[in-house]
Length: 335
Figure 1 (cartoon, rainbow, N blue to C red):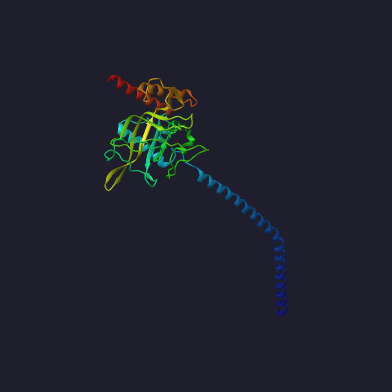
Figure 2: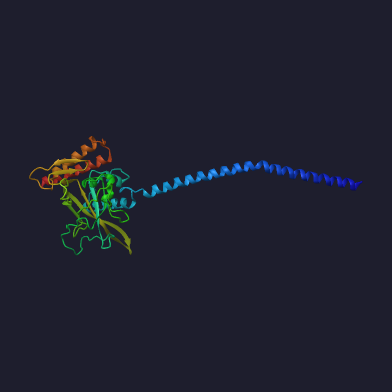
């Protein structure tokens, strides 16, 4: 009797097992379409990811082609601050009234005062940071013609670019790249070659400097010489601590000017100011002419397209320069 009951129990267990296997098989058949759908969804997601990768690559391409402007690159910003510090060290006066500005390189980029920094190249074409300065055994005449062959322009602000006829966005036609690459043609327009000495012998600062910086193309009747007038130039040095002492290394020569001559008859100032040169005057304008020119530049800043207010850093800087020129004129007249 016990044996019969045990056999019946085993048969019941086997029956349940068969039913469970059949149910599992049916479940597998039902779930197959769902699995296929999940796979398809996964495939679509992978395709979308591929599109994102493509957009990401485009972003990298844009970033690699992006170029910093002269006042944005760190190396150039440091050079500009160095130039202003060197000027104040040479003259005891600031070149630019920065007021409360926290971005001096940007302020100088927009200033109504032209500033340009040059250096020379070695025989291998690399930048030469050891420009001869006071005490070097060289001829007194450092005002030689380079014809742009050995001159590299490390910095130029908007007013300096205007001087040579360039808009602000075409600075690459004049400036040497941070990696030492030469200026390049832009929009089919040629590179601007300037002629300014890259050294100063037996002097670290010079005032009232006049120099023809761009020579005209004699085959082009519309082209004119460009001459900077009553400019200031000075040696820029960088100090470093080496071997237990401070060492000064020259990194270039800076030029700053308010006016320039276009040809022989037109005096120009930043902001598009142009006036005829009075007959009988030489290229070196008087202090009064510079005062008049600076006053015109200030009016252009305030009443022109920019419409700047009295508290704008550019206007304040221009006014400070005007007051400096008036002070120089008073000193000159009291002698």
